[in-house]
Length: 128
Image (cartoon, rainbow, N blue to C red):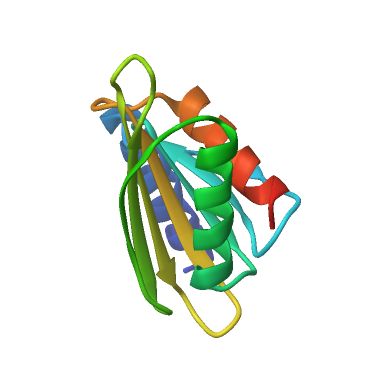
């Protein structure tokens, strides 16, 4: 029974890797768990409220000289839109996971630039 479960798990990993759906999971060293990078979007679980992360995101954008085009949010969710000087869009979405953890998702560009999204996440975390 145990070997069957191991085979099933191995098969799922192979299918995920072959289909291009594999994500890179890197320890963040901050907050609840880590950072997932997939298809140009960076997702992180942080041990902060939506309100705290939202304020840090606005401050990070401002400090980086990036305009805030859209800024909507409440205690449970927030959405911010901006753009780089080359016109590529930035979308930040923050959602409550539970009483102590929130998820932040950052997409930089239409297709997504992981390096730019990761840089922005680093800037947000530096302000928390």
